[in-house]
Length: 455
Image: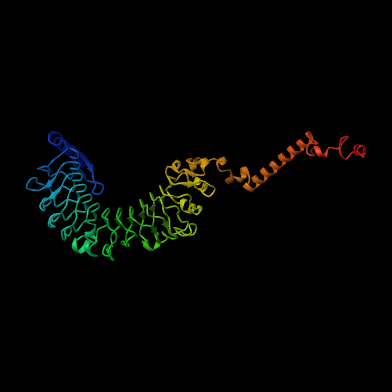
């Protein structure tokens, strides 16, 4: 019986949402209902994205749980002009607008808001620090891709449940690195935060002990900055993205995180060297990505220690795509046996006997036909997986014999041909090799009769 009642309520609520969206001639928002993955309760969703809306809607119905106003033309968030009041609103998406001003009181009456996305706007300031004063339930905040240069004191101090914070691609790099305790003491960021993104802030270095208080942090992204070495990060880290920096080498000295599962080191033209044992201390590493680093010409056969002996490491995914690699040591087959996916595309591979072992792992090679030979010239641009025995005959002695044997056979055959030609020549022209001065006969100067006539 209760299932019937629940089904009826869902239908009625959907009809209400439908009427709200279709009858509102100003916005024509799309309304739907989905089931929350955690609570398994129905969620009322209103999607007003991409409708060229200039101002925040004056009234937000109380029952709405999820509201998206992204990709519009909203410029100001001010309760004097637009009223935002709802105890049911949990998720508010305001990305890709033209927001440049937010009143400190605008979010005052949405105290159950859990996620707030203000990315891709023109925000330069967050007021006097009270803008999030009543958002005690907020767990996710995205401020990326704005024009923020500084932040007011304790602006995040009331966000006691914040877990995900993204401040990427703003102009606050110098501000955030001004002191060791700027995140906790000055901005009031909770030490219980688990996900932090500080990408594209032009950070060159971090003060010593910068992340000491963040013992629960699992995810940290520091890509597209100006680091020359991997900075010290929380020991609890499980995901680290340091792509797009000015790092020249990777060493175990900077990678001593036993909990790290995902490491991304992509898009670094300055990277040239992967040291021996670079990843030796990453006992829980599952995914490693070193791609788009054109000056990485060699991937050390000891990057994980001796592959056949190191039983502590069991990576499942490896990407070495779009680098300058020409070969890969056969010892990595011990890792490949336990991997789910390996990406080796778009490297200038030298296809010789030392690399043919990769053909055994075609099933795990991502887009295997894009792994192409760059040398030698006669098989250039041919897919490694499509190579045949006659493309590299020296690699198949069981079919074509050893190279030394083939050379000896060629020499012997050539010698036999030359001797046969010489014998044929001598048989056809038996006197030509003596010359005219050495002809024996009546007219020979050595003839006795010819000599006596002159006497």
